[in-house]
Image (cartoon, rainbow, N blue to C red; front, side, top):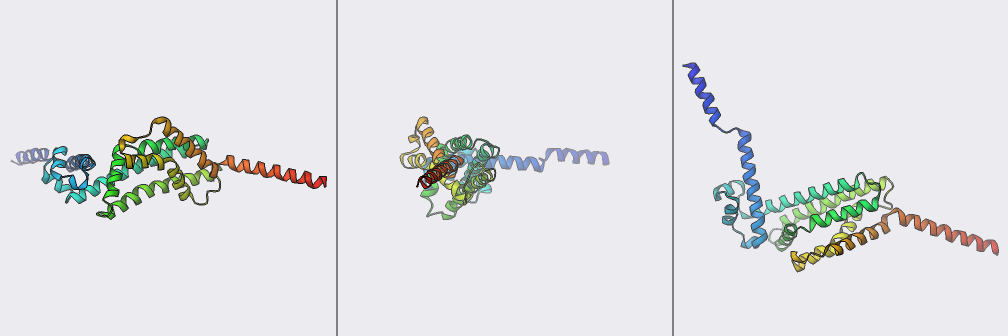
Length: 251
């Protein structure tokens, strides 16, 4: 009898899903809902989106959707925060891979500019950015989260990497690394991002124009913070001092 009871208990335990398996399935459903919600919000905007369509796209019941997200507003917030995390992680990886071990600062900044352009000009990222701005008055906390955890956080990470470049002597006069990071990002992103924001995601500039923008951004940034300008100024000062010495000697 004891053996039979033990066997029955083992069989019942085998029939019951393990906690990790349950958690894994729950997370997969959650991610499926977020993915579907991103598509729906991007297509219809906040007001036009419905949880019915999200549930249908995610292949879950509305009961399951509401088990994970209390309402449409919470779902929208999660979509924005999830996208923000992905963007920041992508930019952080780009910064680490291009700047941390760089020896040629121009080449590294140029590669980083390409990473910014390819990551931030993705159609869904641009559409969600436009949607966050459109709903900023309705949901200011969501807009603030996009700014603080996305835009501002990415600039802090970039500024810290630039400070390390300055510590290695590859950048100069970097009194405010965060401001320098903002200036670099603005040089790279201002024109193409605004073009897409106002003219639609199909208005992406051609590759040759993006290359010119990136090249020019690096040139202007290094004119302010690069070693070449510092060396050039020093050479010109030496030349002026030399001329002054000759003039004084002649008189």
